[in-house]
Each structure stands twice: as structure tokens, then as C-alpha cells.
Length: 409
Image 1 (cartoon, one colour):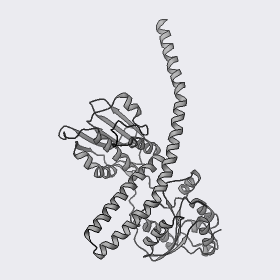
Image 2 (cartoon, one colour):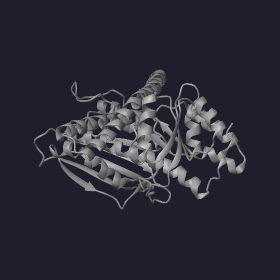
Image 3 (cartoon, helix red, strand yellow):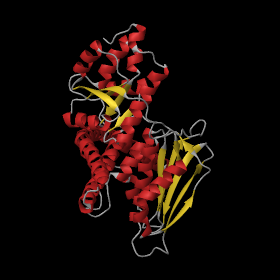
Image 4 (tube, helix red, strand yellow):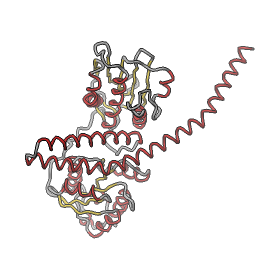
């Protein structure tokens, strides 16, 4: 009886704890949702100025390099550009945390992902451990490649920082990829570092939790990993013990055909096209004009409503570069209004986003399958997206609105 009573008490105590934990879990879920909304908003606000800072640095560098400018001046501009790129990587991580990444191809060659991540993390690793790679043949995951690179970078940096410097010959970081018995693609990062206590392991994916000293990190890296992996339909697990290192394992859905799409980053230049830019940020508009003017004729609409007025009077555009988030009408609103009257004109849209989406706008943008260019963008990305939709019009895949008699409404 005593044993039975103890079992019953233990079960009741556990049930009580679980009931008490429900409000805590609900509160944490609400805080996570709020943090995600805040992260997406901050990413959008940072990306707008960052877009024209980085874009104008690219334009200035290209011009000065062609003119044979002073080497020290060029070096200063290159360093400023590197700083801007680093900021863009941080902001990208914020978008991953907020699950606000623009739509992109969901095919990732996992071995290529690992090689890309290692290229960026190698400086941190080489002072701490030997690197061992055991890569698959090659597994293809149903995930965004750029997001997955960020995930692996965070895992590699975490592994490196768990190992004290100065004993490279003794310590090891290994990266293994493959397909498991459940046909799931996996990436495993193992280190021989200091390991973790059970309490640390329970909190390792909590936002802002860190065991690092002040100034060494905000405790967001592994939270970002968890957020990005689960958003891709995968899961991440960890095994660790004090003094015995740690192993992180990311499992993801395998792509159905396991053949990655190979798309040229820069589309070949076609005939001069006519492009409508729709954006309420004047500096971003000026940058887009600088990037496009050599190859294309450009018309500007400073708001969604202005864009609709222009398109009512003139539908002869090969491409429409449209910002998603604008104060009067969103890019999704503009596209929806055009699509109702002229599907062929709607097929020439290229959405431009700084990372913040309302749910309605997100759902519409993703449903269109139109190209999306993420801020801060590169000139090659903008030109490639414009050429993609312009080439479709030239090929006759999409008849012009004037040919079909439809007008934008």
C-alpha cells in the first residue's frame, strides 16, 4: 500500500506540476510571438536604410575602381562595405528568428550548405580544434538553402566557442551529413568541448539564454537555429555531458526528387525594358534607378495608390518592382487589384521586401509565386529578377494587357 500511495502521490505531484506549467508555457509562447513580431519589424526598419547604404557603396566602388581612384580611399570603402554586409547578416538572422524570410526555392544541397558555412566559420574553428568532415552523397533537404547556411554557422560557432583555445591537436569538431532510416536528411555537429549540465540543456534553445561572459553573445544563436529548423518542418536535438562535449543533430524533410534546382544567379541581359518602381522610400527608389538606368527605362510610383493610377493609364511595363510594405496600400494590395483585371500584368511583378509582413500580405505574396528580392539586395539580384519577368513577356508566355483588351483597375 505504501508503494502504491507513493506512486499515486508522485503521479499527482507530477500532474500538478504540469498543470502549473501550462500558464508558464502559454506566457512563453506569447513572449516568443511578441519577440518574433518585434524582430521582423526591426529587420524591416534596418533593411531600408541598409539597402541604400550597401547599394550606394557598391555603385561608388565600381565607379571609383574604374577610374583608378586612390587605393587608400578604395580600401576604406571596401571596409565600410564589409561592415554593411555583416549588419545584413545579423538582420537576416533576425528574419529567420521571426520566420519572416521571403519565399525562395526550398531545395538545399546539404553538403554545399556545410561547405559554405565552414568557409565562414573556419577562422573561429582553426584556433580551437581539428575539423573532421563526413559528408553524404549528397542529401537534398526541403529547406531554404540560405537559411540552412545560417543554421550550420550558428552550430559551428557554438561548437568552437565550447572549446578553449590552445589545444588544437587534442580537440575536434566533426560535421556529418546523410539520410537516416526514416528518410530524413540530417546534419550533425559534434564537439569535444566543455559540455553542458542537464539544466543548461533544458534551456539551451530559450531566447537570450547564454552561459557566455558579457560581450560574447546575446544568447540568440541556438534559439534562431531552433526557430529556423522547426519552421522548415524539421527538428533539432542535443546530447551533452560535462567534460564530454556536445552533439547537435538537425533533421529535415528530404526533397521528393533529391535533385537541387540549379538556377543562374545573374540572368543574361536582354533588350532594354521598361520598369515601374513602386516604393515609398525615396532613397531606395534612387538606388534602384541607379542600378537599372543603364539597361532599362524607369518610371517611379511613390505609393501603392500612385502605382494603380499609373497602371490604369499605361500598362506597357515589362517589369514592376513593388515594395511589399507601404503605408497606404501594401504591395500585395496593389498586386491583388491588378490581378483582378489583368493576370498577365500581375505576372510581371517582382516583390521587394525588407522582412516585415502582415499575415494577409505574406499569404498573398507566397500564393503568387512571383519573384521576391530581399533587402538589402545586390544589383545582380535586381537585374536577374527584372529580366526573368521581362523575358517571360517577350517570349509570349504572358500576353500583354493591351493585346487581351484587359486594363488594370
